[in-house]
Length: 317
Image: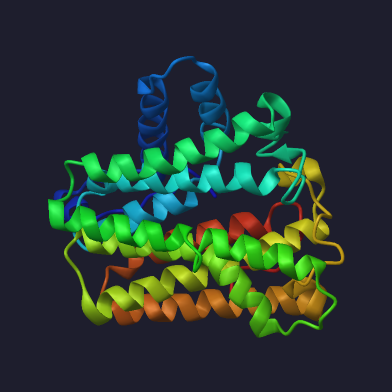
């Protein structure tokens, strides 16, 4: 992903402005840093642990997607900055939990030692809980949405975390690892839909809700986010199979022996399947009536970035 790429809102185009994607990332990083700096508790250790995982360099894909979605409906992208911060907090929390010895037992995340190896398992768990709750607190206090919208935004985020989302997907993934059954592609993608797709779905939903959009258009945007999320997980599986840890920024080879799209149909067909999902997602985006230019450009940049992470994958579909 090239941070110098530019994405305009309708208002920006009318005014002749051209805000870079880099400005969005920088604003989001400042928002996250300010949140950590404002945290007060009996001691600094927990806030340090929360900040350690949250503030490591990252794509911020879920947060950026929410801001671009809001912009695609005519809002200023800064109106969705709080939503973006809440999504990134939840995502960081999920990574801390995924890396625990009881889960994926990973030593490396975002190019650094996993949270539990630096702060211990107990503090890592507490930092994940703290980040998730701070995510909801940000939504509850945001000045960028009316009270009724804040309720809907919180509900969307809660669904993404709950048994139909992150937690349910991780539990199903752990169960699949221990199971000797033969898994189908559909079953594996259902796990991916919960574990990864749900938070992308929430990002697209929440940016749309902020603009007051509901009904079929909101559903189309949710589908768009979900399919991007499943494709994202497919490319992540390819990274696990093909990339070195230094390129991936995390442990690789952890999926060996697990039911994944790659293990079921091989790398080449898994790439084709991920490309199909991206095309389907862009189709749902077209159905929504949102300004497609903003989101299509970002999705292409995001997916190309995954392809180019030392994988030698084929050009954009």
